[in-house]
Structures are given as C-alpha cells and as structure tokens.
Length: 230
Image (cartoon, rainbow, N blue to C red; front, top):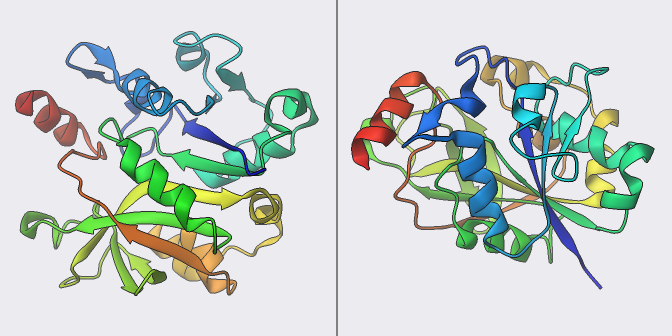
C-alpha cells in the first residue's frame, strides 16, 4: 500500500531572506503556518531544520535537527533525513514524500493531492498555476514549461510563459534515495533551481495546474504584501 508523508525543509540562514521561516505573518511564524496547513491534510508532517529556534516551534517528533551537514537545498535535506538511520522508525515506512517549501504559507490540500496523484505514473511530481502579469519578469517567480502533464523546463529568467511553478514537489522514495548520485549542473547553479538536476539527468516529472491565490514568501517585501492582504 502506498503511504505518503509531508516534509518541510526549513533553513534559517536563507541568502535572500535570513530568518525567513520565523518571519511573522499576522503574528504567527511562517513555518508554523506552513506546518499547520500541511497537517490539515491529515498526512504525517515533519519539519526538517538545522536551527534550534525553528526546532523549538514544534518539538522533537515534528522537527529533526541535523547540524552536521550543510545541505545545499531543500531536496538534499529531504534526502538526508530519509536516508538517516536515526529517523528510520519515523520515516522508514513511507514510500513517497511531498516536499512543501517553508515559504508556502498558503499551500492548499489540492496542491498536495495533485502531487500525490502525479506520483501514480511518475517518479517525481509538482504543480503550477497561471502566472500573473506582474510576475512575468520577476526572477523570484519560477516559470515552468510543460507538455501535457510533463515538465519540460523551469527557469527564473524566462519570460512570456503562462505557468508559474509552485514550491511543492512529490518524490517516490527510490527517486529521493538516488538524489545524491545526481550531478549538479551549470543550469541548476545559474537558475538556483534544484529540480533542474532531475531534468538534466533525464528524469520525468509530472505537473498539474492548480488554483492558487496566495503569496510565496521569497523576500521581505512578499511578507509585507502578505500581511497587508490579510
């Protein structure tokens, strides 16, 4: 039987927005809003962090401290947690995982459900939404090119495409187990998009459009916009 768990990587020292997981959104730390939205789906949810300030928001059963590894991105942190024998009794019996980025306070059950559905036929899955005009030239907004239900490419600098990639991914366990064997590419480093490592390595990723009227928190200005909208 297929079983899924949600993983939320939460690194405190973001280059573009230090301390981002704990930024207050209507008085509540952002990482807590993401966690609560994920828990509302009924799926087991774990926050993966390297910082005690974030850990203290949840307690040991929800959040794992790993200060020995400086993971390069959220997918690497997920792969590290899943392969760590310390966590086998918690994560060992799931055969697929949904990675919800810690800057998605407005994540919806539909986004998570679509990723789970995408994993029925693909080893990897994600979601997108029609892009708003003001986001077309914003490098913080990831654009996505697709053919049907398959991702062809993602990029920050692309312009004129109709889909915005959203920060929710699905992985089969066997795919996540192999992430460390994949070679980081020039394109990944330029775009700062870890999912390009999968695509450049020949992996197939499904994508399904969803309705999304929320805000991804990439910058302090996004946090201000979120608070003003509430």
